[in-house]
Image 1 (spheres, one colour):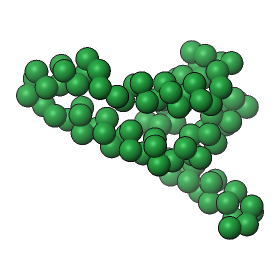
Image 2 (tube, helix red, strand yellow; image 1 turned 135 degrees about the horizontal axis):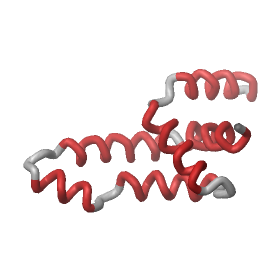
Image 3 (cartoon, helix red, strand yellow; image 1 turned 45 degrees about the vertical axis):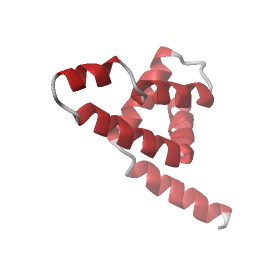
Image 4 (cartoon, one colour; image 1 turned 90 degrees about the horizontal axis):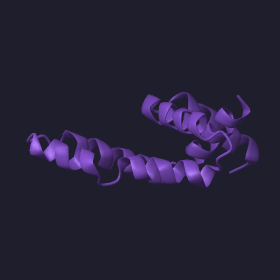
Length: 93
């Protein structure tokens, strides 16, 4: 794939990136404006890995948070390029 094609594909991917991901990256960057992209990715993983939210969700007989977090972790793992681009966009804003 040529560099120009990659850039075009990445721009289109940013347009359709999920709002939750855009909001999460911007929120992390607001809290830690000098953070690197690896920190942002680690924070995203920390947000959606097993935590007290899963326990509270299960105690209310709802598996919704588990499903949402699993889907979001999968998206994060498979779209690192988009996260890096969102990071650079937030950093340059």
